[in-house]
Length: 83
Image (tube, rainbow, N blue to C red; front, side, top):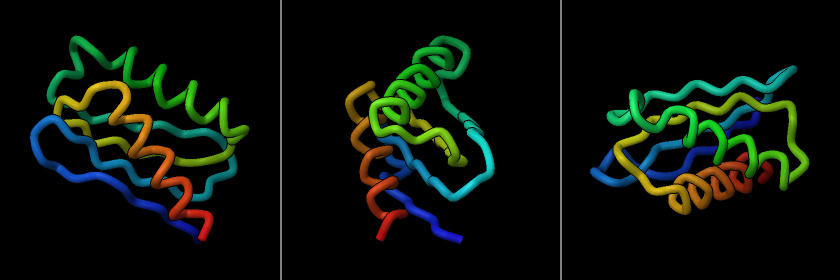
């Protein structure tokens, strides 16, 4: 199974791991989940859509990262999974 990981669990960062899956699965754990769950999920889904990926498991452990950080970590994890 191919797996890609990017990021850290430091404050204002996010640890994202992606792996092969038969369908799209997104699991989000965040210290700001009550306020930003929908926005984090939207950033992940939009990024996957731009990359043309619809069959992947994404695990996101957020520590207050901004949208561009989430996107960058996800893109890096996907690239690492592909290698």
